[in-house]
Amino acid sequence: MAERHRGFDVGRRDAAHRILWIHGYTGSPDAFIHTAERLARELDAHVLAPLLPGHGTIETRLLRHSFDEFYSSARYFARTLHGNKPVAYLGYSFGGYIASLLAAEFKPAALALALTPYRLKFPFWLPGMADFLKLRSFWSKYLNEEDVRIRKGTFYYPRLPGNSLSL
Image (cartoon, rainbow, N blue to C red; front, side):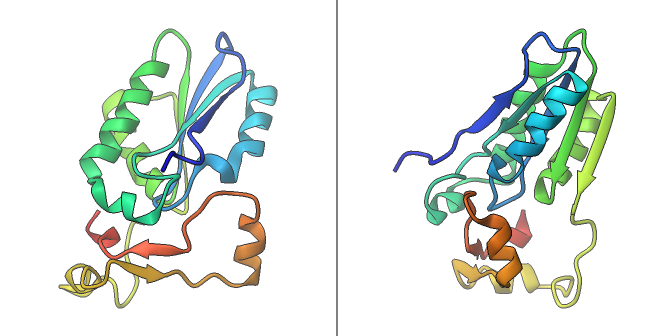
């Protein structure tokens, strides 16, 4: 099955600024294309939002990829943006964690994070919880009516892989 979405690249390539935007695990750049277009326009920026490996297809493809593959992919795109113009990293959820690691390595001019997990809430911090969640391949996400409305027209997975905490 082909990817349904391959990420996006908006704004002029010769723009004054560069922005790398990393989406969350089980998400896609679809959720922020309109914001990226606005940033490109208002900040004179070239915005790149790649699709992380395994995303944009069927859920089981996520299970084939490791954290190292997600990070290597993001590193590739970070390297393509660095040059003689200021670069900013934006990270959403799991993408925020990746953006933070990229920032430590590449030293961008700016780093912005949204909903980045930094401390798990009960019961997920309990020892062995990550192993317990791996007992099932997928867990249904709780999405209320507002969550579903917000995601309308975007690509996302309604279930979370059981190995997600180990990432």
